[in-house]
Image 1 (tube, rainbow, N blue to C red):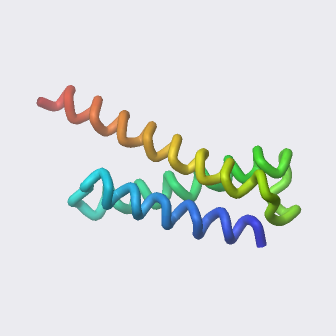
Image 2: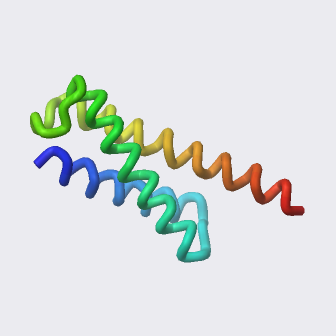
Image 3: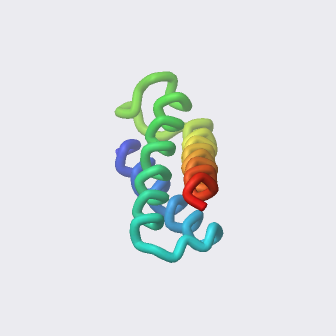
Length: 87
């Protein structure tokens, strides 16, 4: 149950980040959704002390959100540096 929650929550955070970052193309939105989901799962594992199957805890939800936001921020930073090299 925890894994599904973290994947869905991370996907929503990724989608919202795509709106905030004003990513226009479809690839950027999907990359943010994937990065948000992956970051939330990694944060959820850290918050649950190494177990994603143990369910949700009070600390794992905010840690998963922070993990998703950190990974989305890293992806945005990578994109900006890549765009700077192309110009």
